Structure formats: structure tokens, C-alpha cells
Image 1 (tube, rainbow, N blue to C red):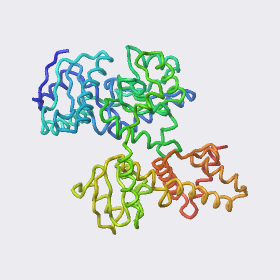
Image 2: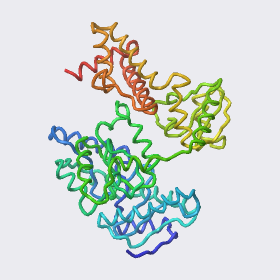
Image 3: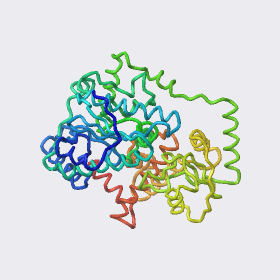
Image 4: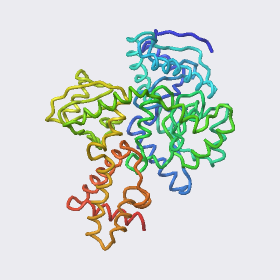
Length: 450
């Protein structure tokens, strides 16, 4: 690799790159028309191959990044343009992650056999702003230069053994099972590889299912911001399990027990006492208003992803936000219009502990969700000839569980997501039957279970 770094990137250079080389890292599905066309390709494939699974692929973009926030772009002539934040601008721990980000990008390209001959990178804070714009501009130009109708195609998911062999080819490392990576224990639902492959179990494909989709959102928020990765592909759970079974054969593998222990951050007894005293004081003469998400249509204001809690007297306890965060304050006013806000900043551990301890002081999201299902079952029982237990089982199945006994809420964040799902289902059913949305939901359930 030629280690030539420069910050002298211009729009003219980008135009010349498109004329002489191929951009291999844009997301071809960003335009809505491309996304719709891709869905039609998949539908045609499944009609002809009903027993197979498949995914959309691009002939040009061999590495399809996050469509909203590309971290780098690579051209076929060996030019790499990346946007890691410059040295000295962030907290030491974050800075170390950002420094490792470029190493991961270079390793990713090496695994894929793509040489890097020239690197354009920001050198200061102002460059970082410019480079964010440059990367978005490159993505936009790619849609002009390359036609999705000739670029997109459908590829069947390989058989499990072939899939596993392909994933580990060329010395590829499963980062979520590697001892040298600081990634949390997430082996029950996803797998992230050094070459950017990103697989999620199919049961987490919908945020409105019974699986804890919040796990994935929090994982992206807390960890994946420092990793280059492709858009996720959903695969059967048995494929995820097979990847981790294979990973045990390599010397970089770390056991689940060791990985979990490495993730546990110790907190002193004095610090824990101080934190719990603070939380006790928080709930004196106050109630928390963000037990459920303010908006079920968007995860933007979820207290778990934004790390905050709003109380009945207008107190906002937050990790990131204060009165100067105009966008956040605007959204708070939208959902809590009668409050006058004042902010207190705390660490992320405080926010987690607030929601862990919340059930000691008031009704929890878990309680609310269970009660929602029970009320739904009572209404269903009155509508039908079902027994009480049968109605509970049906309501649980309508919510994505196997039966009432399998309803298992992992934590408050999971419960908030499940409440969102129930609100969403009711909203969808109301569009068809405003007078009795439960009857519509039950009709659809019976139809799908014939």
C-alpha cells in the first residue's frame, strides 16, 4: 500500500474519479425507486424458488454501506476516502476507537483483495465537516453514473455449510467472537465479520416482532459506529449458530463466558451508593414519563437509544442533551408540551440504573405490556367463544409469541419496544376497522393460521 495521505480533496477530484474508476462502496438501494425495484426482483425470485432464501446484490457496489451515513468510499483505482474524526478532538476512549476505525477499513479492503494506493482523510475539525459532505456527494453521484436496473440482481442464500465456509474464507475473522475486539456478548442474534459482513437472525427482522429488536439498535449506537460494515443480511438462526460453532476452531476465538466477563465494568461500592441515593431522590414526589417511548413510529426518541429520562416536574436527566440541543428540546416539547424543562447531565450507567430501578417506584413498561395483553384477551374472550386461557394464547400468538407461557420480557427496553409493537398493530387494524380494530386483527390472525 502506498501511504499517501492528503486532505486536499475537492469536488473536481471526485468528478475525475468517477470518470476514470468505479465507486465500489455506495448503497444502490438508497433511492426509493431502486428499493422498490429490488423488492420486485425478490418477489419474482421467490415465485420461481418458493423454498429458497435470497438477498439483493450489486454488480458495482461490492460493499454496500449504511445508506444514510457512509463512513468511507473506495474506488477501483485504489483511492480511499474516509471520514474518521481527526486526532485530539474527542475523549481518549472514543479517540482510540476512531483510530482503530481506519485500521479496520484497511483490513477490510485487504481481506477483500482491494489495494489502497491513495488515502484522502480529514486533518482537522473543519475538514471533518467537509468530508462528511464529500462522502454524501459521492453516494449521490453514484446514482447518476450507475443504473440500478442493470446493477441489481438476486442471489440465493448458500446452503449452511457453504455459507459458513464462504464467511471464513481468506482469514476472515468473526469480530463478535474475537478476543481482541471490545464487542459485547450478542451471539444469540447477530454476527459481524472483519470484512464487513453483517448478519442478523431472521427473528429480529421486524422491530414489531416479539424479539428484542432494541438489542440491535443499542448495539449499533454503542459499538458499530466505530466499525465499517455492510447493510445487514437476515439469515436463519441456525446459520448464526453455525458461524459461532465454526469460530471455536480458531485461536482468536473467545468463549461466551470470557466475553461476558470482559464486558462487565466494575463500579465501586461508594459510587453505587452515590448513584442509588441520587435515584432515590429523583423519584421523590416525581414520576418518570418516559416509561414508554414517546413515539412508536420512530426509535429516535426512545429513552434507551437517546439515553435520557423525563420526569413529571420537567426534570430531564440525560447523557448527551441539554437546553442548547435545539432539536432534542423541540421534540420534547412536541411530546410533553406542558412542561418547562431543566436538564441534569449524568453518566450512561445512571440512565440504565434509573430504568432498572423504576419498577420499585411506579408501574413499569413490563407491567404495562402484560396488562395490555390481558385486556386484549378479555376483549377477545367477549367477542368469541374462546376460554380465558385460549384467549391469552391467541393474543400472545398475535403479538408474535408461541403461546402465553412463552411471553418473556428481557428488560424495560424490550418492554418499551413490545408496547410500540402493540400500538402499531392496533393502528394498522384501525385503518381497516375503526370501530373494532381487535376484530380486524383477529380476522387477519385466523386467515394467516388456516
